[in-house]
Image 1 (cartoon, rainbow, N blue to C red):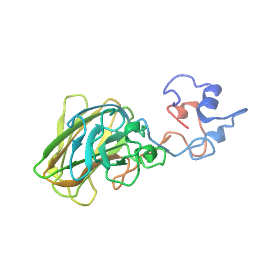
Image 2 (cartoon, helix red, strand yellow):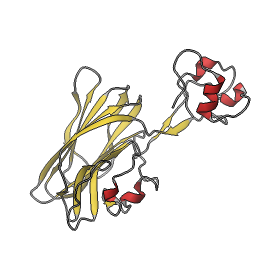
Image 3 (tube, one colour):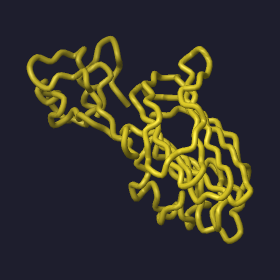
Image 4 (cartoon, helix red, strand yellow):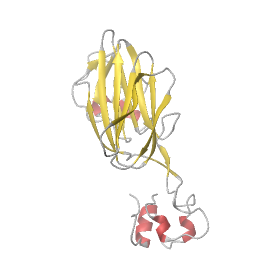
Length: 248
């Protein structure tokens, strides 16, 4: 939760938000002090997603199956599959069907992925494909938290990424579908307001172990850490209105 953005803020509201008991000194509420942080891990950036692409366990490159939404998938697992590919977001727990599968070409099983702190991103989506296969996946995310986010793309072979954005007037292309490089590269900076939508197209053409993208708070790596409480003073006079929208 965060404090309200207008009107009166009570002492009890501040105690609840920042976990304070007893008397409150205004100096306790300086940004970067004992109660009001300067950064936080964002786990509510996306309010909803829609997806089209694979349906059921779809075999890609050797022992790698794609499942789409790794949070909600509840169907059968691909025979002989070692890795589970798909998308995840908001630090949500993965479906229990993947508890013993390695996630997105890594060495971490589904049961340990989130609890072990490996979901360090806003959104992560990986695909794979076998020889002669062409696969297109489309994911649309509606933003639940305003902020600056970065889209980072990668492909080991011929994987392609495209990006569209809708800020209220319909979708427009901000990054045309293009083959990604073998270096993780920032492709778009998304200055999002609540309710804005971003659509990703991830396309595989022929044999490929991995292609993927992140939505991140960093322009160079996967991350979900963001600056918070930027309107709260770090010294000097502080007013209740400076705490509008502040969070622990």
